[in-house]
Image (cartoon, rainbow, N blue to C red; front, side, top):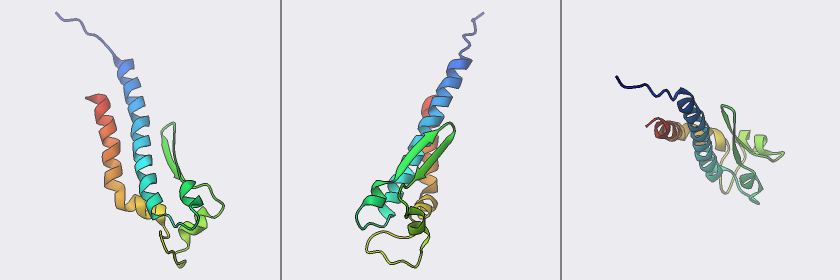
Length: 110
């Protein structure tokens, strides 16, 4: 009879690592898409975009005092970029983000 080689903790660790990698991949994809839509005057707002992962959460953020207002002011005119740059990037790319996350998880369990 074959002996069972239990690697439950190793599998759990691999899944944990894959989850972090998956969240990072999804967040970076969203960040990259959002930056392309972010209004640009000096480049400061676009350059402040950041994707970060902690625990089981991924965040895409902008670090300027005017980022939130710039995002929400749909009446402002932009030569390049648009309002709702982060929201629209997410809505338009949900499937690509989900696929990026799924691919990282699949790599870990294959």
